[in-house]
Length: 420
Image (cartoon, rainbow, N blue to C red):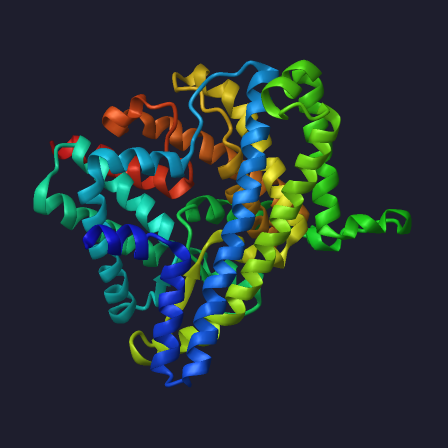
């Protein structure tokens, strides 16, 4: 039963958010029709978002395969999803207990402190629980103390993470109705602060002056398609026709394959944005019931693509600049005695894009470029420093990628060493 509740209900983001929407509508005493409609549309919006993310992740996996072959690069590739799955094998029970009690602490802290945020990104809650279970267990903590310490840290992170970003999230969205609930917040905060530092007088990425003959670039889907087409064409040409068609494209002409992958990527981003708009339209009004009845003035903290529709140009700029920083870091890391971290396309897209939006909010184009570049360095160095603290999982060819996992894991791991 616990496994069903944790993995199948609370571990499924669409169901978790739909459940909160359902409770919120019931607390507002909405009609049966409104409750069913609002809950269904919330779940549907999240499923649309997830479907788009799946399309993007698939094309990025192909991109990574071509990239590693083209440039013959070996190293550790950060992938938070893969690490959480590996952790479940040996730390499943501890992960589940930390997640359950961490969510309860989140609600308690939102009720009794000024940090009125309910963290609704269910898969990130699960992933952070898994990392805490691994770090604590590897440090010799077990039983009651493992669950208690892990749950307290998780619950605190679930309110602190949205809170530190809220002044900038408010600026991005133009309202105080929702927050960002994603454990990459320290990276986004750095991007916003860097943007504030370097971006004085820089106009927004969304105000690019485009000649009339290039008006098609104003459409973010077209701009993303063209950008990714250039990148994919370079990779398939460096990888070679024979390799691409025999190992990657399934026999499809390598140039056509590159074009289709690029436009598929842009289509995935378009689907994500459509899902985000649908979720926001439903979850914000529904959440009013929870805010009024359970946690006064509570705000839903949602996944990072929530901010994508507010600055689509910053999304692609953030991705490219974060990825560029990852490439440069790959050559710097061995020079300082750290493991080579190969840029993971998934964290550099989703987190780098978000960093671009936050950098743009405080520093315009200059903030988006430099802020997301700094973010790319952060999510390259933190996983490398975290790796030795992961115990047996430190020998895996992957690690946790997003910034907060690195910060929490490094601090907690070193604290355990000191106390031991």
